Image (cartoon, rainbow, N blue to C red; front, side, top):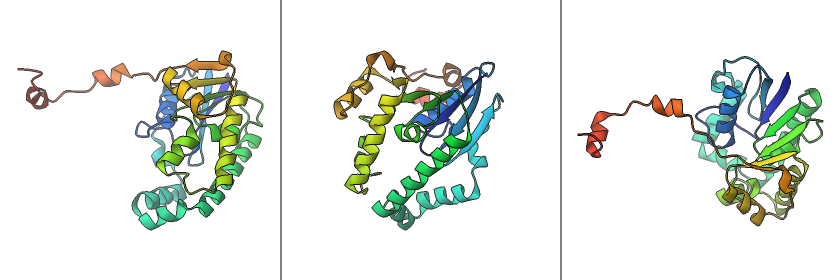
Length: 228
């Protein structure tokens, strides 16, 4: 049995999350449990799914502290402003780094499939096969700065995170992108060299059964002239 751990910096795998965590949800749900034992780790949530085919929504399993933190960020502007400050982000990333490295020291697995470069960088000391899927336009750090998420970090801290991102690319056994355009944008935006033999282009899948299960509203179809 091969044990695989999926990682993301924060969040949890669910249909209702965007980005890498949504993809992780689908992988955990659909990967063969005859061949793989699955686990997940982020700074928000950690779970060993084993070979259990049941994958309940993890929101109900979040710790009270994490639930309170999510509520405050989503609903209290002053709290969100505080946790977005440069001093807090410096402290926050130090805690994240310690958290992942403790996890790596205390757990063993055969494959790490990371969906962001920072969580992978913090797990590089673990002797397992490393897979990195790049979901971010031009790289995680560039996209987060553009969105304002990391914009308040001190320049030296940003450069350190950029270095971590490059190290993750270099130390991965496989690096996958959701399109050729995403691959080209990443390498055009970052000073990193990667062996083409370990790059994969894997387009995001579509759950046809879920789409087929959608019941169209006849009034909406009539309104758009799709039925008579």
